[in-house]
Amino acid sequence: GAVVSQHPSRVICKSGTSVKIECRSLDFQATTMFWYRQFPKQSLMLMATSNEGSKATYEQGVEKDKFLINHASLTLSTLTVTSAHPEDSSFYICSARQGAGETQYFGPGTRLLVL
Amino acid sequence: EDQVTQSPEALRLQEGESSSLNCSYTVSGLRGLFWYRQDPGKGPEFLFTLYSAGEEKEKERLKATLTKKESFLHITAPKPEDSATYLCAVQGGSQGNLIFGKGTKLSVKP
Image (cartoon, rainbow over all chains, first blue to last red; front, side, top):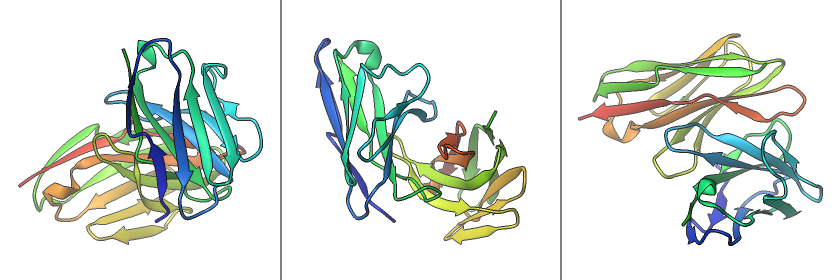
């Protein structure tokens, strides 16, 4: 199957700082990338969808000014959590797909802990 | 509203004890139904995609089937390494985003 990587795998930061998470599709070009967050013992919640070269579409209740998404190329998307607070602590997972109707492949996730 | 319901929430099996996981869905214009496996602290791992009722797919001890209202993931003679949370998701409508169920946590005891 297709490979999607995320970096870093784990990050601890102080409240008020910003954190950037990278998501890369290693062996295919991803026209669309997705960002999810997952709280313990819960399923994945879609945060936003991004298409290469255009602005991300955010799900209801997700602050676009807090969670900045950039999809600058067909293999890279970044999620920046700005002015992070303890309630932003979660497991963030990206996924990528080559085209509409194609399978989404997920990255290994990034564990964010905000102190 | 598109919806996915998985049952049971948790399933404990003895090694070798076959069983099935259920995924019931309502979606406008199904584009595909997906099964993923998720281990603790990791991202979901793709297992199967099913596109139309009657379709079946197999991989090792797993077999996925699809009807117009639900999908089953059959596990034959499971092993402890099959322990994980199994997620079902549907893709439909114009947006094509995945709608996930809450998952079934499978534990296989030796």
